Length: 354
Image (cartoon, rainbow, N blue to C red; front, side):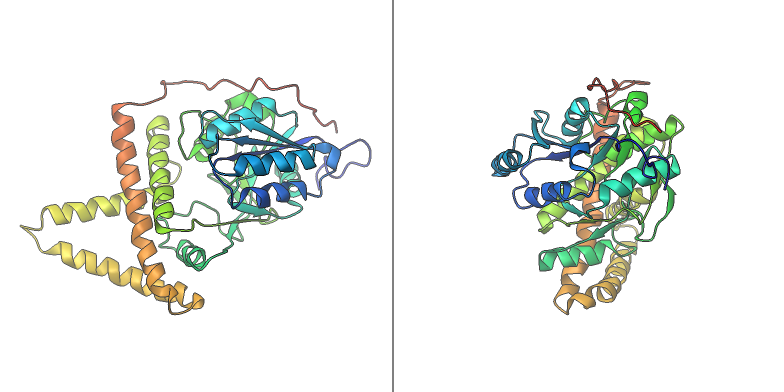
């Protein structure tokens, strides 16, 4: 590997794992224990968890885990959104490397080591790996099948499982500390899409993101239609905000649900003068139905109708979110032209020497 992990003398650099969370009782312990199980030296790892004032048992679980292991530190995220929690963690972080872990995921024991190694090997400013779905329930298996399809989300949020190379954005993200000193923290007004917005600023500053299948992680899909719809509605809003804020999009794939929805609404609104709306909807139903059979049958015959229903839920939610975001942020942008987000004011990092 590169000089950091290939060194023969001196300690490895301190790494800070940052975890934003809110009301994550079913998943928070598994995520934190994934962080504790990393094969990075114990004395070179700190774990900062920013809780968005959870109303369930999340804080009690975190307090218990912190009492068991002094590497865990619980922070209050009064902003209640991921960007605010991440920024609070980064301000407190002492590590030369900052590795994000999101709660709805599990991480390989070498996740931190691989992230640091890929950062070192590539010189990238942000690295991540292809996120592979992992299910606990029948519905989650259906969501994983649908989102694994080319029709899943109108342009994948995550790189393909075998992706290796430079990409628009990665999830969840691992960074050298100086990235935040150069481009600022996560946008505190970003209700979602904060990772892609940050990668947009990194690219504008001449940096790049890199995806490697060496970095192993699994994500858990949402557990209900309602939660899934809310998730993709927020994604759509966030994409619209990022597009308006930066004046361009590195990838137009995630806007396809918006243009599809806009087209269907236009056809329905003008159906008095033309007969295309029923044919268009029938074609959509046929295409998504055939794809539901193709990707859903591996989960059994009962999965096919569920997968078929998931396609329009995701498409409509993301398209409607994008439309709502366009209107909301055109009328009332919550950023200033040319603004530069304040760099981190964290304690001095323990920087590795070659």
